[in-house]
Length: 196
Ligand code: SAH
Image (tube, rainbow, N blue to C red; front, side, top):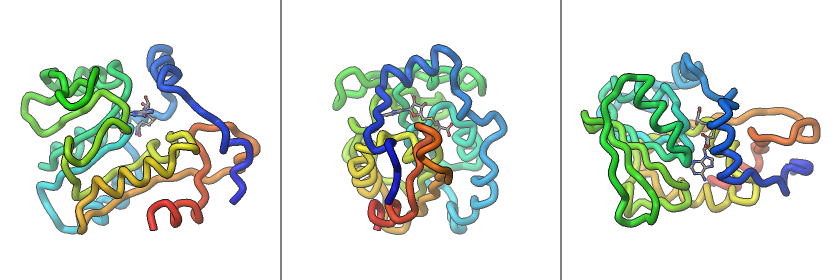
């Protein structure tokens, strides 16, 4: 597959933190993503009270939306600013505590208990720490992961889902020679080989 020079590109955690500091967050959708509304039934598949995972969550408003529907949300985000903005923009009281298994990581949890956001790198997490999920909303996540880390990311995600889970993945289609990303171009063939 031709992903051009994107194969070598690396965006560091520091650069992501800077994007948040500078307000350089064009990826954030204040009204939520239309594709989640469109495919909500596929994600839920008639089930209620699901555990839903938001990898690389930013301050995605869909977390509040699904929590209000009675689901329990877990997200992971490297920027503490993003996590705090999520809770303050929705006027949600929260508490903050260290994560014993991960040095330097913090868990931010809504007082109502149904939204838990881990502030750390996704690569620090495992199913022994956060359990397994019935659903995943992967938007701005796989496509934001450095191309060299895709395999590791996909293996982790496969490990984090229950047998009967639904995984909604949003990708972007464009000529990777014309834009350096992120979001990166992930060809369909690669998605098939990553997730099987
Ligand atoms: N999914 C969100 C945000 C997409 S942008 C949305 O739909 O709006 C990608 C986000 O991933 C950024 O907020 C960035 O800070 C975060 N991020 C990048 N690398 C990460 C990593 N290794 N672990 C956790 N979060 C990471």
